[in-house]
Amino acid sequence: MKALCFETFGNADVLQYKEIPDPIINPNEILVRTKAIGLNFADIYRRRGDYHLAGNPPYILGYEGAGIVEEIGTNVTTIKPGDRIAFADVPFANAELVAVPSEKTIQLPNSISFETAASVLLQGLTAHYLTKDSYQIKQGDIALVHAAAGGVGQLLIQIIKLLGGTAIGLTSSNKKAKVATLAGADHVFLYSEKWHSKVLEITNGTGVNVVYESVGSTLEESFNATKIGGTVVFYGMAGGNPAPVDPRMLMDTSKTLTGGDLWNVLTTFEERKQRSTQLFDWIASGKLNIASPTTFSLQDGAHAHKLLESRKSTGKILLIP
Image 1 (cartoon, rainbow, N blue to C red):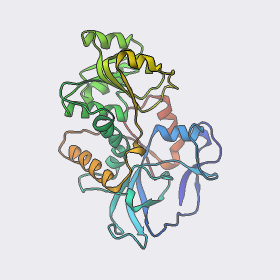
Image 2: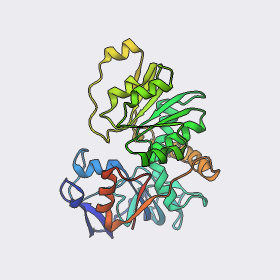
Image 3: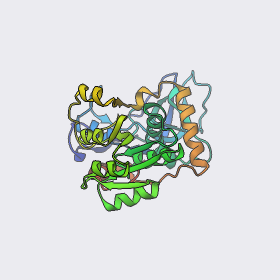
Image 4: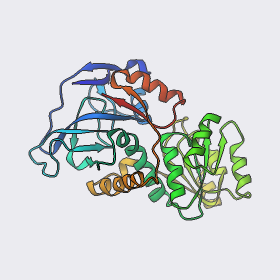
């Protein structure tokens, strides 16, 4: 099979599109021929060497994709060849064939295309647990969303609105501000403005109930924009490492800092099924709109990485084998 690999850590130019052996499935796995693969910042971090990678090179990136079942292991009884499935947390996805543990499969309804599944699963399930578990959005809550024009950002805005909240978005350009507004944001500010002051202005000086913080380097300002007793949910650091947080500040202001990681949430087949079913229902009923993805062929994966790193993209980037 062909796969997008790399031998050494570095910039996007280390990526190679090459022939490697097909995966061999064990009795509890299925072999999936991928039709669409999601690109995420975690792939960038791994390529750079920011995350630990097990095993020896060549390394294959990717955790999210959708495709057709080609073969099933001897112990698999609930899935058959020809089934349409997707996955959000299976390694080595940047390839034509992927060995997927059967408990990590998410079966696709006919209403959900491969491209939609690969666009929404990882980011959509992230937005789902952030608004349901990390901080449960309630009617009347005001939420501040970093990187509001990105894939997770646009979904967060829509889900916050679905659950009865007010969404304030932060973006790096006027073009991206329009994207966040189209997603449903009630207010959008630019990072180049004194955005935490503007957030305080429109909340009558009190601040927001929750900040969904994915930039990292803006963590201190996020706390400044949070009301007394409010919450900052830290789930990414696309803009650099955060400054240390003084626990005394948390005590004095009754503010909460909580973290979020999808891998700690998707622990069972039932969790995947329950959460993805709600996502798919929202999409099928028109309550959740998925922006058209930007697509690259898998062999042009280096160009896709460069676009994601440039921060000029809006919405999801897909790799098509």
